[in-house]
Length: 267
Image (cartoon, rainbow, N blue to C red; front, side):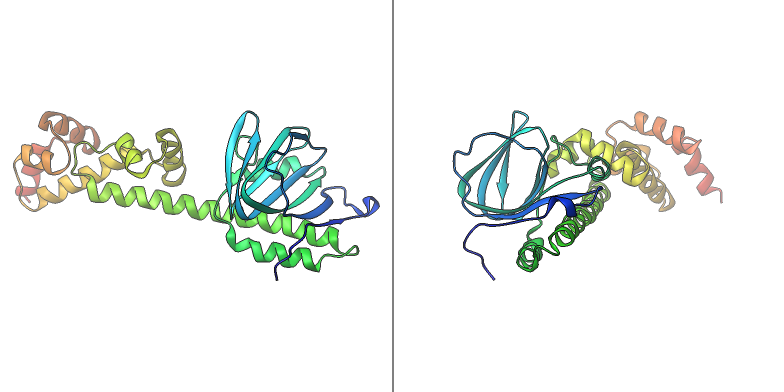
């Protein structure tokens, strides 16, 4: 069901809960291209249903597109511009629980855009249609909390997928002596500081340490296959300098490559 006009439903103030209070549930279809900055008395969670626009907040400009969820903040100037048939749903809310929810889900003026949530559009639209004066508070709060839950789940899945991609990239390219955190991030188009933190968080080991472990594991495999040239082993494992490889190997394995090869040949 498509709605052609703006819809705004209000809840009686006396019916609001203390933890989360809902002001309204709105389908904004006529956003001005040159809307003025607003200082809002409440928070908003917004879901872009179609078109394109811009969100201006704290001297930062964020691009808006269909499927984006974005937030605006109480007593913080914000400007939403319509650049191409922008339409979005939003719920205005406040309450004592908001700060806890924002901290829990990592929502802040610096992190207020969340992409790829087109699947929630029908849910939001149907919820707005079903909302009435008697159930608006319940439906709106349910939509808000469900959406936050979906955002977190999607974020966790995205992080897992991203780190899995980096792990696979390491395992397929460890033999390249140019491979390191920076070159891997350049390949995927991510900030190295972000990936460094995320990799350690998800893998409980740094990117560099994981790469070293993969390289040394392959070195041991080559030795077990009777490859005895330290130079060749080093090159095949991504080390240009055999001496540096030997030092890394001894540091991690407790014995030099030559000693380890001798041990294998004697057993």
